[in-house]
Image (cartoon, rainbow, N blue to C red):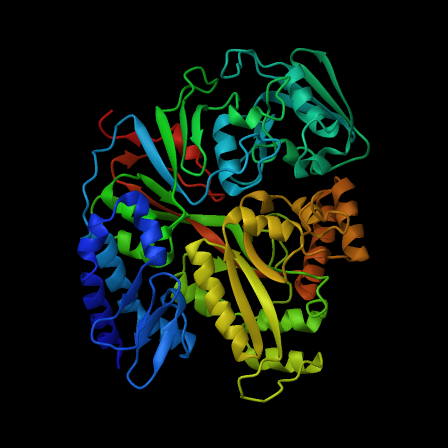
Length: 591
């Protein structure tokens, strides 16, 4: 049966669901899509779960396609077969369905996010949702510029009289949202609360280099370091840590108070975060009066809300097919910009199978990265060869890469003593567990990787969990392989220490794969203390070559910042890190 037949059959099937979807309450829609069992019209055997498994009757053979992505066909042919089918479903389920929606308020901008923030205390929260909201509620001593330069923020100026001393002078007239004036005591307390253990956070180790903090007056803060640290300024920027008022304790996250452009209003856990403009913001009040971050875990529902106009903005939260389909909506606009957010596969270096570098390289060669970028991502991502983005001053391009090569993958597995027990037969060489979050695009990509690893003899058990459960497992080292993204943190090479230094295993750092290499440790420590840029660059160059060879991470791609938004909004400027700074200058029609 050809692609046209499949497309028509799925379109016919989906058309029978229109009334059910429109009659389904919005809050039950996601559950219905997860649990409902359906049957394709005109077939006897083709049935499955709407999201978890869809079955297409292909004439003499039934192809099981999780999330409409997998099958026994080659990837290129599979995507060519399914492209019309997926778009038929998207147009029918997302666009033909037109359940009423109240007109948007000119005073409120609503933004779809995939998950709620895990902690609104900027000393603690680490998820991308947390850090992006932190940057609206809080300021830092200094901030990051578009070209990764360091710019003033709460500090109007600073000086470094010697390599271990940093003196900052604070701006005048800055107040917290509750009216208290900012002073050097607040800055000292923010860092000291971590160093003294009053607040437990993985961020603490970043600031252990501080020997003492001095506050000679209300506007002056002096940091004395134990040793030179070239990344110290960067670690004081937005995204690193925000300044909290003196006395902020462990319950601060429930009602955070900062100095940022927006003030906290409310957080209904895993439902909605509401912020309002800070009229006393030292750079001037934002143009948007109120922001609602709506937590919508399901990608289809996020697209529906954008289509209906009940959500204004979806940034980096939609699968590429949804983006391409929504692009045709007259009331929506799609914009993209180069991005730095980095997707990777992480491997557990303590696992007996994955401890062998040849096995890790075989997995890298088996991943069809080029096809995924072209056919799945529709070129909304660019290939990655390492943690740092290509426009970074320390980026090293001359590293080993792994184009899709199943034959080479099988050769490496043979060399590792993991021969195929039955040649082209069904028995695998070995089995792996691959853990992901429930994010739709992540699950779909993981399913394709699962199929391609099967082609070289690796049977993959794919397990998707709610993010809290998933993240807890990887922090504890309870995984063989997982995929995640670095959001903004990879804009400074200091992240190499947190991710790859042997002493930075959780809960202290982010070396979740428990990678160990004495030479890597030495290069990291040298580059951290060295202030000469060229010497640091040379050290980071060698470091990146080692990482690309040993593969504690398998690099996938950098995600472009992709934003779908309502045309009632204008003056929306995208950033490489995909943050929400544009809310400060955004214009809303009708105001």
